Length: 373
Ligand SMILES: Cc1cc2nc3c(=O)[nH]c(=O)nc-3n(C[C@H](O)[C@H](O)[C@H](O)COP(=O)(O)OP(=O)(O)OC[C@H]3O[C@@H](n4cnc5c(N)ncnc54)[C@H](O)[C@@H]3O)c2cc1C
Image 1: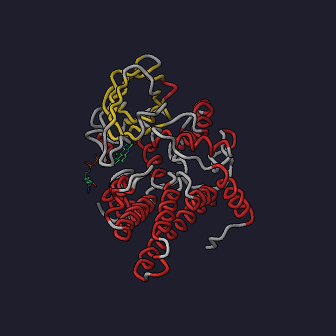
Image 2 (image 1 turned 30 degrees about the vertical axis):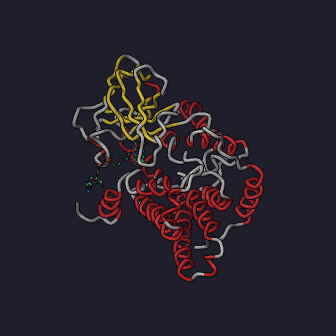
Image 3 (image 1 turned 30 degrees about the horizontal axis):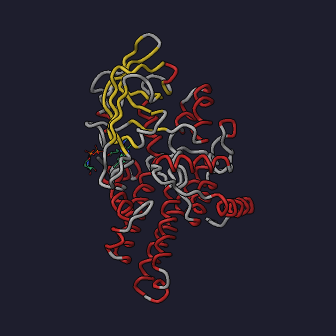
């Protein structure tokens, strides 16, 4: 497979590179990381760099998925803040949503005006998501939703949640799960931020007490929730869809900058950095091949995305472990906008979010390789 840019991609890359030189923004004092990324998302959108592979009628640019990889690579190489993580939120509307829902939600998701969170996990339903017990009970032309979600990233800032709730029998596992769009300012929702080991409150608990959600905010028909959730998490496991390729590229660039001449003078440092570069390039080329296949076959992501999630975790953890080895543990004490300590600790969470590592291995064994349960 040819991994080089064709003429249009090369032109896009050079246009983006020049634009980034002029437009990268800095985080303001006291601005939370989440709101800073939201502001950056809006700046990128105004420049025409968000929603590249999304349909034009909903605010995208209708380009092929390969453009998302170039966007990630260039953002990472420039040291700009991460590419937006919208790639997985909202894809379900393209497949299951009504035209009215697509027009209502997608343009504002792409422009960064609305912030979304994903309300899937519960105290009794993480790896075993089919055990979820939040209930949605039909009440005229609405539903009443009650239950608890946990580990919901950015719920504190979110305008909407894509929420899974049980509309069928209790204990019905995958059957009887439905997906809803819930406006986060609805009466009956309580959001409690959780302080994580990074010192930040990226994720939250969410409590729902009879929250009214209009029937028109259900995605798909009743009981469609399971395939919607599976497609959403498949996108979430894609390094370009969640902007992680850009994040790793920026971290590598920063590490090389901090090491300076050592990379040239010391063979063992050079080997370690080369090892990281190779892992990063493999991930990036793998994602590009994956997305090119998606373009040419018009296929949706499925269980094979667990391979991508494992590769992504490998790069994240190798990168941060190597940075601490080479720069010394004292780098973990350095302050900064995104301190290495915080990123090092967050890299550990890569084995958990978006589906734990053991679960990815189970999916690959059973659903990709066809091995017995
Ligand atoms: C930073 C971060 C952000 C997150 N953001 C969100 C979010 O926005 N929205 C959301 O809905 N969720 C979110 N999550 C939750 C995440 O999806 C869950 O934590 C994850 O699915 C694991 O579920 P759990 O925490 O309940 O662990 P458990 O399911 O209790 O698993 C505990 C351990 O047991 C292992 N295990 C469980 N079952 C099996 C099995 N069958 N075979 C082998 N091993 C098994 C797991 O691999 C894991 O190591 C986030 C998590 C993190 C860390």
